[in-house]
Length: 82
Image 1 (spheres, rainbow, N blue to C red):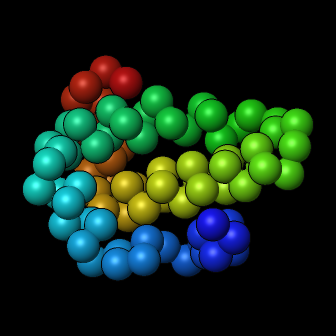
Image 2: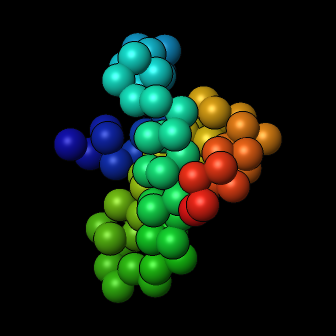
């Protein structure tokens, strides 16, 4: 499991990961997930293990934003009222 802790550059197979997200979630669904995850990135982690978890959450959030694109994400937030 230590290899996973050190890896923050992306999924083991980033292309497959992105395909699974795109095949299973609508853009509105992805935007909603991002909107609810972003506040968690502001949490102050009490331990190094919790901090690592927050770094992974930040990576996941940023990956989802990259999939949608910032402009599309902003548009969807407005459309969805988030």
